[in-house]
Length: 71
Image (cartoon, rainbow, N blue to C red; front, side):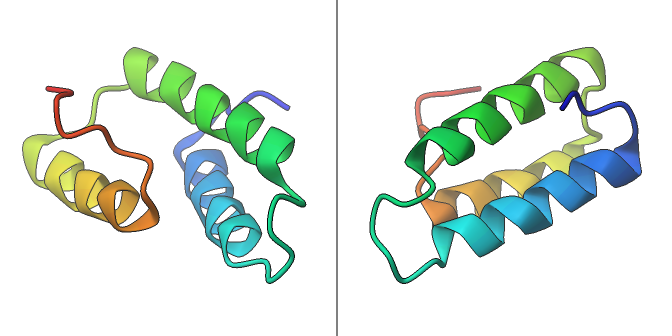
């Protein structure tokens, strides 16, 4: 599944939240890695505006997926 629209990206972010909150540890690890990878591809092609980027970074930091050393 490739992300091809902003709505698709937002849907992927929601799906990511659902998988991370799953009570069975490790159940979705491969799916999470694949989804995060697809989201990064979308982000590279469609840079977020500064204010959107800060909100997005905060969401990913909360989920543990944002490396503080990334720009």
